[in-house]
Image 1 (tube, helix red, strand yellow):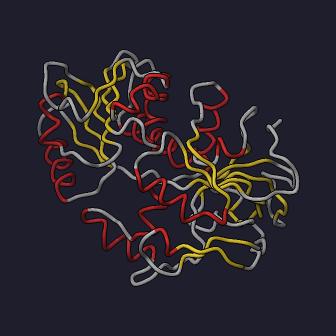
Image 2 (cartoon, helix red, strand yellow):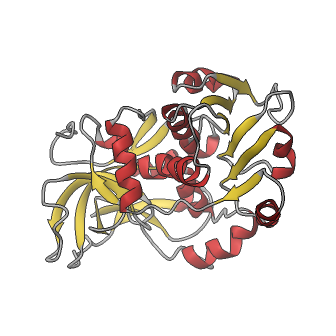
Length: 331
């Protein structure tokens, strides 16, 4: 099969396209014909071995100390089940599915555990529209619903509101009845507002950690700010959420757990069946809508990474793969 090939860390040009063996199905697995796979910031981090803060060593140990452990990249996919293992009852051949895996999604076929982070596609959503949902929406669900327990009427500030996680966070926060302030560039303010943000701040013109407004939740989706800066705008029982693991956030997590009402929180969004099913439910309820910036064929995987790395994307960057029939809307 055709697959993206990743044999060394570095710039987008280190990615090539070549032949890889079609994965065989295990007793507890399904093989999915991949129709779409996004290039996320997570994929970019893995490609470049860009594991920030104290996550550098754990990241290298998990992904490969000197070179990538997994030759075929890609952690998210949407496609159709073409083979099921002997013990599988959750899916059948022909099911349209989406999900997450450790690697291997940027290829024509991928094998995943049937009880893992995979679900049937929601009705009315295309493969390229749902492919990045376990990454962006899955992370937003983990942080806003599980960590922060965001409630109706609360004020939430979302830093990086135009990014993959930020776009989902804006929509999920609104669906939970929160008052949402998104922080993005002026060029992307219209996008963030269209997703439901009540207020949009241009990070180049306004420092969101100053001023009189107080927030119940501050979610830094890009991991670029610290608790010390944010606490001045947190409400008395406010929660600061960050996606970046650092010695500083670990210190503040411990300190704020023991003393004071304001909390600093970090977590890992590890997709599983329950999380992907929750994302599916949000799509079906109309709480989430996809935003696609560009689609690239597999042969242009490097250019897709360049687009993501540029920071100019106004939505998901998606790899679309050749398929035996036109993309269809899931029934």
